[in-house]
Length: 82
Image (tube, rainbow, N blue to C red):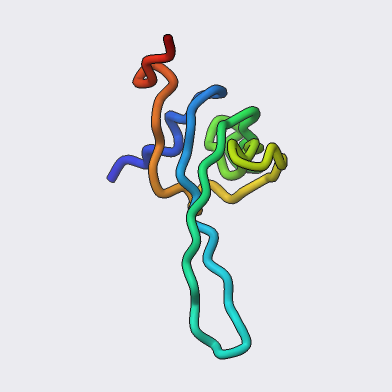
């Protein structure tokens, strides 16, 4: 099983799953989209990305997220900006 998030590069876009628990004990899922601005490696292997610093493309907020919250990666080469 290959982990796609190990191939994430600075400049890639990601869909992030932000699950939150509410007092009714029902999980509500909410997704947001961000752009990778930095990658943070693990203690055992610095090239194994465990955290990403991302900028929310809607709000401009910068956050550090766990790599396992990334649902989809859109490589910067896939985006046709004109």
